[in-house]
Picture (cartoon, rainbow, N blue to C red):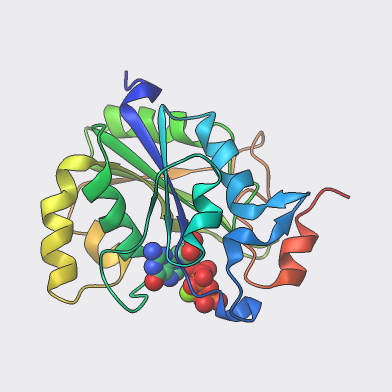
Length: 205
Ligand SMILES: Nc1nc2c(ncn2[C@@H]2O[C@H](COP(=O)(O)OP(=O)(O)OP(=O)(O)O)[C@@H](O)[C@H]2O)c(=O)[nH]1
Ligand SMILES: [Mg+2]
C-alpha cells in the first residue's frame, strides 16, 4: 500500500486566469478564503507533504505556510510546466497534482488514485469525471494525476522538445484512468471555475 506520507500534493495555481479577467485565480475569494488555500487544505488531508506552483503574488501564496515554486519554464507554457516544477522539487516518491480552480474535487481522490496505481503497477494514475452537468460526459481530467517522481527525466525531455499537452506526455507512460462517477461520488467534483460567476456558483449557499 502506498502511504499518504510518501505522496506530495501540488496545487497548480500558475495560470493566467484570462477567462477571469486576468486576475490571480488562486487568490479569489471562495467561501471566505483564498481559493488556493481552500484547495491546499482539501488536498493536505490526503497527502503527507504539500507544495504550491504559482507565478504571481508569490508572497501571498507563501503566507499559507507551504513552499511555493514558480514555473521553471518561462511565458506560461501551461499546466505541464507546473508538473515539471513540482517533480523537480518533490522529495517523496509520488506527487499528486490538483488545479486550484476545482474546489469540490473528491475527498478520497488520492487514496483511490494510489490504489489504482499500485494495483495496475502503473506510472501515472489519472482521474476521470464530469466537468459539467449532464449531458457533459465523463472524461479524463489530465490536471488530476498521481505520478511516480521517477518520471522527471521523461518530462524534462518532453517539455524541452516543445511538448505542452499533458495527455501527449502521459500517453508515453503506463497510465491507469480512475473514474469518479459512481453513485457515492459528488456529481460536481470536477466542475472547475473559469469565470468568477462559475466560482460563485460552486460556493455553499
Ligand atoms: N504552472 C502553470 N500552470 C498553469 C499554466 N496555465 C494554466 N495553469 C494551471 O492549469 C490549470 C488549468 O488551467 P486553466 O483552467 O486554463 O486556468 P488558467 O490558464 O489560469 O485560465 P485561462 O487563462 O482562463 O485559461 C490551473 O490550475 C492553472 O493554474 C501555466 O502556464 N503554468
Ligand atoms: Mg488556460
